[in-house]
Image (cartoon, rainbow, N blue to C red; front, side, top):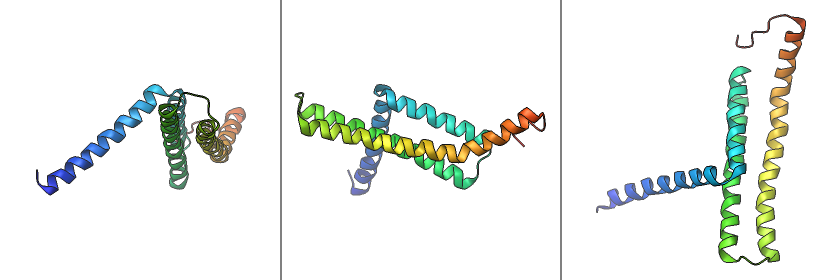
Length: 138
């Protein structure tokens, strides 16, 4: 195999392994399923409320960050479980801190989501209750 073909094969193999990891995370981790569902809700809300390009970038970046951290958390848990099944203080620290990283990002994303979407929901609710222009897609 030539050097060029070998590099291409490695590249495709790397993507294949990465997609397999993502699918494994989605299939096996309940929290990853929740993150994916929330991402779908964010995308729908973004389309409905016609958020700006900057808001889209922020929302998509945060959704991607949370899912990436969830995958890292899953891999840390798997490696710790591979190394030991005993209750060890260092194993607990590794698992808990990885989970904590996901929680910090998720809480930050929720707060930022409120900053972006709550004013838009308030405008919609105000228009709805006043009986004025309720068609949001304009």
